[in-house]
Length: 201
Image 1: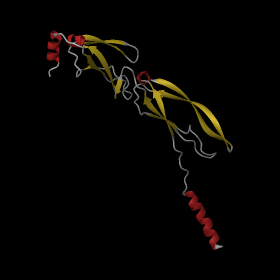
Image 2: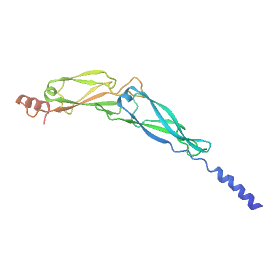
Image 3: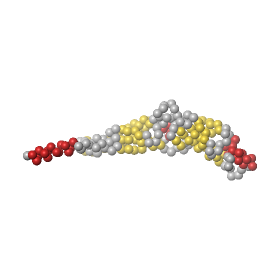
Image 4: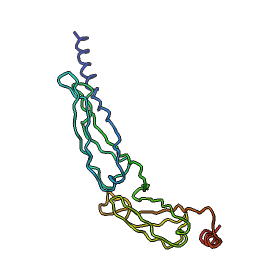
């Protein structure tokens, strides 16, 4: 009798220490263009997850809406609690985590809250001053006047024309213009003299 009761007493104690483990979240990339991260965008994503009807597994479709905020950075995570798969009829559904992934851009490279534009410029213009046409991520056309000699080391900073700062709405980083000076195959003596003055060896 004593042996049986002690065995029965030990079973619940063992069971109570087995807390059900939380299912591992399902993580996936959410690809965004630089334009989408500049203006913000609602993205609708159709997912298929495993659920149960009684003890039978079923495929369940659902559309999730991700509100991408202006200025979000690569690696930002958005969690949808309990919207993932169920491993068994009585298991808790897993979370789904979307992770922002920034697509490469043809005109700009993002550096934190700043945007860098590398602009090719012929030597003659680089030495005499010119205007750089820039199309912004929201479609505006800027003309940035460059009055100094544009060497490969020059960085022209245009305040407030970078990426929105998500934590301080209304504020933006800077646009940084870098120059890729294109040299002609041969230089005139005057050009050589100008280059010597502009780019000290």
